[in-house]
Amino acid sequence: MSARLLDFLARLQDSELVARFQRRCGLHLVVHEEGEEEDEEEEEEAHQTGTGAPPRGLGEGARGGLRQRQDNNSNVEYCVKEARSRLGYEVRSRPLHLLFLFSAALGNEVFYITCLPWLHWNLDPFLCRRLVNMWTLVMYVGQALKDLLKLPRPLSPPVVKLERRFNAEYGLPSTHAMAATAIAFTFLYSAPARIQFQFEAGLVIALTLSSLVCLSRIYTGMHSVLDVICGIIISSIILLFTYPYWDTFDHYQLTSALSPAFGIGLPLLLSYIYPTLDHYSPTRGDTTTILGSWAGCSVGYWFNVQLGETFEPKDPLPVPLPALTANGLALGTARFVLGVLALVGTRQVVKSASLSVLYWFYKVPKSDVNARRRKEFEVPYKFVTYTSVGLVNSILVNRAFMYMGLL
Image 1: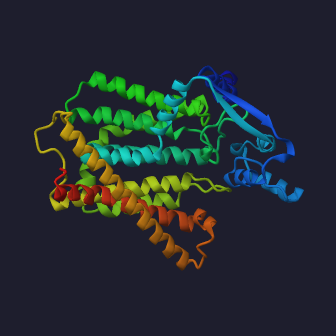
Image 2: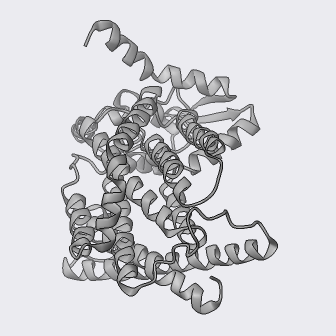
Image 3: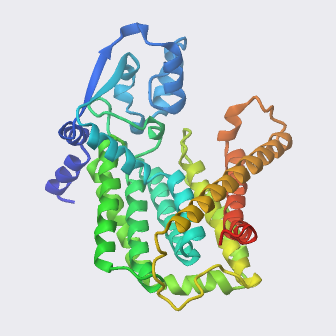
């Protein structure tokens, strides 16, 4: 690449560009120097998450070894400064602050794991299935690229970081930007064949929501402009190349005798061969969560076809959007609340049971909470847990609604 292009890419990845955007939106960094009086517990927490300096009490050799194992993602040159400073922020535009925090939440896995089932329960399981397929694909590609490229997130200071739980992860590409782009435009291009709506209005909504999620990643200080642009481009390329095969894969997923084995085996394999880092990062666990959810949903949709009830609209397609009535809102709310309770309950029961089995099998005391970070723990317990959640969502919840008179 030419020097001019490299310089342009470096500018897009510059942390100061993120900080300027934050200041334009009314978010300002405030640094209160604390010197050596920094709370030891906070230093320990920062060390555990990979976002700060090693805890006090270590000799220089140990501290140096820990620093050597850290990488650019941990902002090594800023670790000591961050550990000795309390970084705060001042919000000067409350409306923009709330808008971007809400937009950031639209790109979180928790939102998708509740929003996508809502489509299944209240609108059309076909659309839910299509979105889950594309969400899983772009998220795996994005998460794996992060851990292969190992490019850092913006540095703080000068950036204000509002979501430090992501600090231990790498930056490029932004998987929030990838997921928002994929979900918005997969829905836009799939929905017209299923429901009646104005395409132009849908396009405006898709562009608005995906743009807000992308801008929120810069506002929260978690991604550079380059991270976000690359996320949009990569997701768009995936959509472009997979679009011609959506219907073919959908037919295979629902009718092939090999679909259940494929639906469990492939995501489980992908979870175990996920790129390995020299330090702990939540990306493998988050990716396993997504793959497990897809596995359960994929097998569940196949079983629904075998059982003769897919819960898809019976009227000729495309069907009108459901009328917005008091009764419809009450039923929709009841389905959402009961459905989420069913998924959360399944998650808690299966997670507890699978962890108990793993602690017993590996003869590890339950007090060892760090054991959950090891691959032999993290992959099986998360995969089994979220596969169960996907199965309950796709097979059992709508049938329970039918018996309860909510469908």
